[in-house]
Every structure is written in structure tokens, then in C-alpha cells.
Image 1 (cartoon, helix red, strand yellow):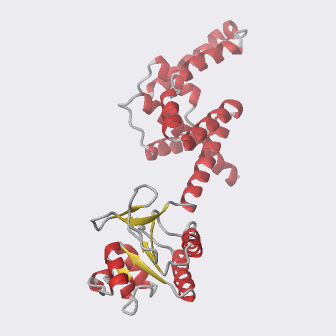
Image 2 (cartoon, rainbow, N blue to C red; image 1 turned 90 degrees about the vertical axis):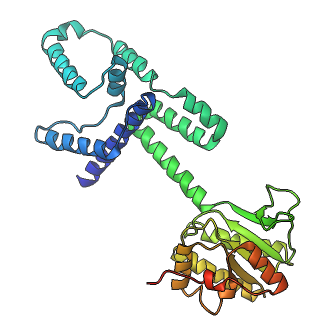
Image 3 (cartoon, rainbow, N blue to C red; image 1 turned 135 degrees about the vertical axis):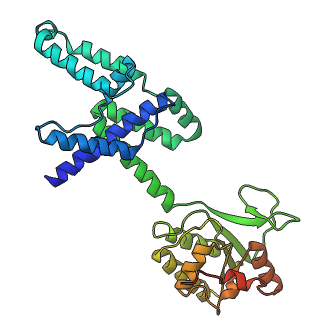
Length: 319
């Protein structure tokens, strides 16, 4: 029963949070705390289990009806339960022949107010991928049910996240004339480039899901431009490395050595330097391949001025 119980708990919590967020968006003074919602649902289901009750969750239609009726506190559910009991005991014969379509109309009118058309327009104008996730989730919810819609939205969101982290943005940089600043060559015109130097900025955390993307980018660049002898990796946007990234960096260095080319790292953050030091990539023997900035790296490669700030780029946390 454990897998079934976990599934019910997950779907119930997701449904509750989804409707809570929808109501919160409508009422700016409401504040939803997921941990508190989880505790409330957990306690309700624990108590309900002693009385053979159905699993408790925040119903979308009931919440919409409550909101439409102007309910403000949890007491609304108590009064609603009392009215249902009174109706079942004394008024059942009067409502017995009431068509289900009438009840459906009440729910539709209540739920309609929770549909955020403005958000759909915003997504269409600013992020088409999120818009299609939004629409797919809505259509699945209408066609199959709330649980299926929530699961569809979660799966699509995870798939998009995996795709984004697996194929991050990599920018080739060039120097802005009369300055020491380097910018993306695809965004700025008239940047100064060196035929034998490739400067690439990796705009993401470097780990197992995208490390090979960086390796492939560098190798393909060199194969398409054989004049490149030096590769400078701008690490300003890299905040962390995992073991797979370490292996890829080592493989890249080795592959470039086999091609008689060199890899340099610039703008390396402190936590990343710590990891590189622990894995023997940054040490006293190769400190001249690490620079504080792209400017320092280019000047040393071109004019052999030496790494003036080697003592700073080699600093790591003392363990």
C-alpha cells in the first residue's frame, strides 16, 4: 500500500497547493505557506484515518465556490458541512431530481473567476515555451482531470528544466575597442578578436548534465578554426563543479595538449577555485593558466608579460 499512499499524498498536496496559489494570486493579501499546508493536510488525514474517511485535500471546485461565496476563514467549511447534513436529512427529496448540469453550472461559474487570462497573455508575449506548457496543462486538466493536469505540468516543467541545463548558453567573447571589457560577439558589433585566441563564457553551473556540451563546443570551434591555439574559458558565471565536470576539464586539457593547444581559465570564483585545487587542477605548476580577468590572460598570451596576480588566482579555502 505504500506506493499508492505516496502517490495519493503527492497528488493531493500538489492539487491543494495549485488551487491555493490560484486563490493567492486573486487576493494579494493572502499568503500561502506550503509547509503549513502540508502539516494541515497531514493532520487532517491522520485524524480522518481513525474514522475511515476519504483522503483529505484542497478541492479545486469547492475552493472556487467558497471563494465566490465570499468565505474568509476555515469556519466556512464547518458551516458548509452543517448545511450539507441538514440538506441530506431534511431536503433530499426536494433536490433528488435536480439535474447534474445545474450543479456543474454552479462550479463552472465559480471556477471561471480563478482562470488567469492575463497570465496567459503575458506568457504568450514573453515566453512561448511556458505558454505552451500552460496551455497543455490546462487542456489536459479539462479533458482528463485535475490530477492528470498537475502531473502533466510537473513532467513538462521538469523536461524543460533538464533541456535548459543540458544545453546552456555559451558565448564567444571579443574585446570592446579602447577598453578592457569583453562582450558576446553575437550581441555587439565591431569587437576586437584574436585569430589564435578563443574566449568562451559558459553561462551555467558546470556539472554532469552539461559538461560534455562545453567540451563539444571547444573542440568544434577549434576544428572549424584551426588557427586557434589558445582557449580562454571565462568562468565568471560558473558557481559550482561536480565530479563529471572535473573529468571533462581534464579531458579537455589533455585533448588540447594533443592538438598542441592550451586551455586557460579566467574569472574563477572562490568556491570553484577550491574544487579545482582539491582535484589537483589548480596547483603551483599550472597556476600560470589561471587569470583574474580575460584582459590579463590575453596580455600574457600575446606579450608574455607573466601572470602578475598568480598569488590571488591560486588562493583556495584552507581545509
